[in-house]
Image (cartoon, rainbow, N blue to C red):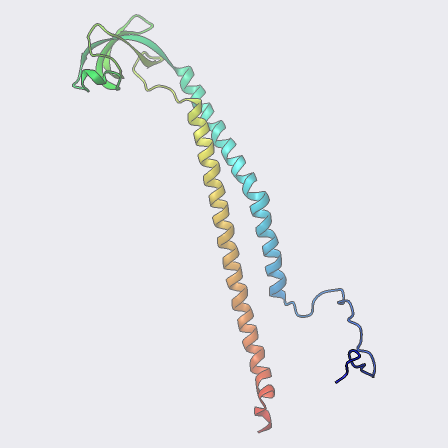
Length: 204
């Protein structure tokens, strides 16, 4: 046993590891390159396309709903009406709850009207309530609020983002399955050529 250190091995030195050759990898098939580009495209869609589509759709929905809000606000206004008689509603302890009641009001042209509106009050026929009417003086629903437009914008943006993400993941999965089928078919065809020589069946 050599106690003076490792035994020196004589002979030619092993060749130094060379740096990998630059250029296209000969083992990379066309399907591999296609899959790489699809992965890059998938990443760009998620990083750039998804936020752009969501923000654009959200702003468009918000702007569209704000136009509706402006149109309804300009076409409707509130007036003071009097309760005529109330349909059965909540108990007196729940007088703040909205309910249906018969009301009468005078339009801007001086014509008297009677109708059923959603009001909140104690039900006394002398009570005054505020109702919304249109340009013709008929009862109308309250106009949409800006908060409704914001909610619509957020909802549309989130829905668009989810749709883009689902389409991107579905497209990536389908492309990958198609490339895998093509790889397996090519490998099987090549194996039919190589296997007889590799297994020695041709030498029998």
